[in-house]
Length: 412
Image (cartoon, rainbow, N blue to C red):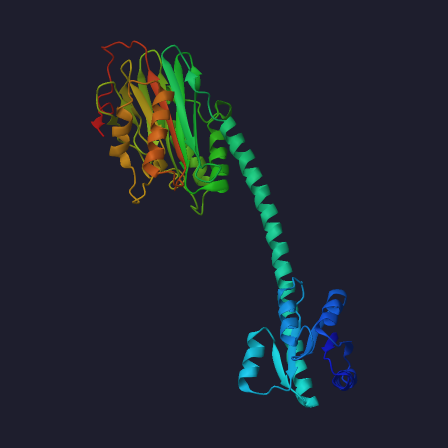
């Protein structure tokens, strides 16, 4: 390591050079502050021993120049002077010097001070190396995060592409959905599709948790709900509860640790007669919206899926009148919080949607989304939010016998 001696006295420079070279140091010399600056610009100097009082640029000015110079490596400075008053020492150190020596300096004291300088410079080098490692690690994390975000965007787009098409599914039924993941991808999933002439099947599920794990589980369940899987066989004759029980047994087989659960509402709708049947597994109750009337919730349902393989579920049945709409939704909608931490809740949801019961499903959900934005004041969602709306516009027989056991609805 190189040391620069700066002193206008040639004998002092010669004496220091002998002492330092004897201890194994490589020494450079300068007789003025300006000459020292030129050497520092071109040489790898880490320690400077400078006289205080010199013609032109003195030692204090030289140290100030060193401190304001933007160099990667720190230069340790020792101010050496015949001034030995306490206030002189304080002034020298406060001006940026790292150490202070009074002339004539003892060789042993000089070597001790240089040992301190070496320890400090060594620590500084270690810190620089750690900073470089942290910078490299940060860059790696930043790049990895960007890749993850890109993958999440792709996964989110793929997930949305699998959602059903909104619009007129039959001459008497119009549908729309609302879907907002809390973390890019969602543990919610919904679908509606035809299962026969004049009949629709629909479901909305919510897997516990958020993010990728929940999204993968909901995607796996949605594949089971495809007609091609065979799980839906018998729904037309045996009802949604029968399919729900089959699905529950399947999920329990792969969930022995009970590390997740699934809530779900599954049903079918007779588009000619207006008959709505559904079974629920721990899911929030559907809302029935009628023009110029209060929203009604349909209660009933068993425990969430994936807990008890022997769980049973019950078919609920009601008759939709022309112009009525049914709204399915996940609990994330009820749990949307305002700035005070208050959750929206079922009653407030019912009040919001019943004002738009006369609208088409897509318009009603757009209005709901707008109101939710105002309620949350743009804050991040605490849970995935999804909703599926189905509006019946056909004529159904007024004398159709509604199942008396399951057809009762109450005001939300």
